[in-house]
Length: 239
Image: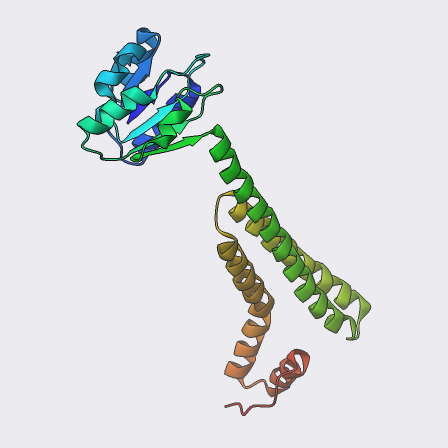
């Protein structure tokens, strides 16, 4: 990978690339001293901006983030590198403002160039998707818990209903919080909804399942029938 710049953003990129198994790093910067400082941390090579054309053909990935007011990488240099690479593609990310890489580079057939605008679009779309999924998940939870609580409200014992309502709402809130955390961590909406469904189902049936299992094991038929009645289950033979 060729990293153009030596600031915090490029350092974060270098750490991410190294963490994903990329070992060969070339750091290009206007200040060769700063380039050396960063390159040494990752066992890479430091070069000046003027030397980029000599090394560009070695890079499958190019990430640029400098404070230069003008582009530091032009279409001609990239064309020459592609010839040396025998048309093997180069993936480029330009996160500088203003741009470090000439826009015309994107016209080259074997270059995949992404800019700040492209990345912002991806981030915005991802954020919208997560927000929509979170809202959908909340609606599903509220609907299902609401149905369950309506049933509970028809039963006797105001304090018991109140306690059970609070417990159910706490289950809902806990599951919703963890689902939103999954979305914020980058999980897909489908994974978050699947987590919600499994979590709510397991939590709501856990205690009745334990009571029913123990009652069946001990032959406690009154409790078995009581659980059947509460859960609205059809009579089944018990042994």
